[in-house]
Structures are given as C-alpha cells and as structure tokens.
Length: 148
Image (cartoon, rainbow, N blue to C red):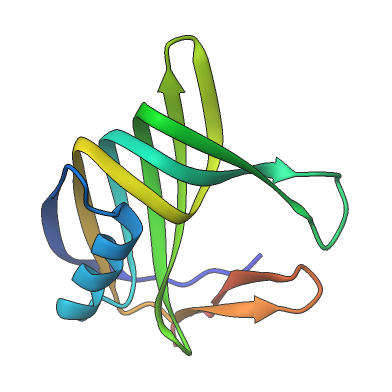
C-alpha cells in the first residue's frame, strides 16, 4: 500500500451546461486554476459518450470493455486528479442510468453534458502524488509517497 497525507485547499462548485464536454471542461478548469491534485463529486446528465465497464477478461494487463451511451443518461460520479508529466491527469468513474438500463464504469474520451452537470471539487494540497504509467498494468496509476 502507498499513501500520502495532504490538506484541504480550495473548494469549487462548478456548473457545466448543455453541450459542454465534461472531460474537456474539467481539464481546462484544472489548468486555469492550477489545480494539481483534487477529488470531485458530480451529478446531472450526460449524452453521447463512452465508458469502460471493466476488462474483457480478468487478466493483466487488462483489455478494456468499452460501452457507448447515446441520448440522455442520468449520472452520478466522482473523479480523482493527480499531476503527471503531461499536466493534471483525470480518473473519472460514474454510474449512468436511463430507464431500467444502467452502466457503471470509467468515463473516457468524451462525455457531453445533457442539460446540466453540477460538480463540487475539493483541492488537495501538500500531497506527494503523481499519476504515472505502469508498464505491467498498462495504465496510469497514482504513485503516492509518504510526506516527510
């Protein structure tokens, strides 16, 4: 197990509007506010995106099973963000529902807002953390170091 201790920084409430891309909008906000590490909770609705709903088979490295969602889906989710060599790197998981259908997974590539998404973002300061490529897992994973 790895860990790092930090402290709460700024807290932001965001409203993403109809037609915005959740991933793109969040990435831009993080860069503008110079947020390196945070967690975020969000709710609202999305349309026309893709999510990873687990691996195709339980093996390492995993081969992701992508599911597309179209039209309007309710969403409830959370994200973690840590710095990487390329700037803040997001990891977003959510539950999506439409009628009696449901998807649970990792939102990737595109997630268009339908009507509105509300987000509360909690900045974490003082962490010794970064998201780095893990060759064995073939994933970007958090690398955490105890604060000295």
